[in-house]
Length: 157
Image (cartoon, rainbow, N blue to C red):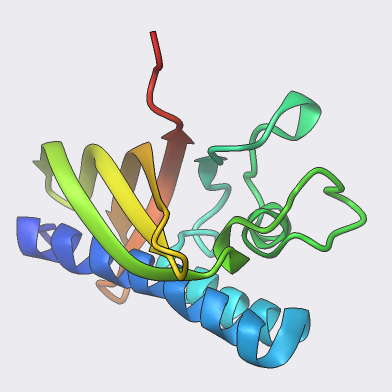
């Protein structure tokens, strides 16, 4: 089940549109609506069904820097978690548009890696750019799954 560049580009778009849909769900229906959309998003394109996901969110620190479980990802995306009190909910920040800019891609069979920039624009027009790396694996059904997600703010010398 060879991964293609097209598979990766489609997954990047799905990921970005997922953050937009979580933001809109939060605005229209509150935190429970956002959690429902976030859970469905995570289940559809992250690889938590395959095992731990190597997830390092942009704005996570200390003992909670890494999020190998779905619960940790949910807290990061939606906030409002007593188990992750420092999370503000990255995916509920009013995102409206998404752009990915590829730096490099590595593909070998059913494993692939992507590195580049993600730009998200919120409803006020503010743009947040983050450095991203995604690792992908196809599951038994041939669905592309994120098994590595590393994110950081660009270095400011």
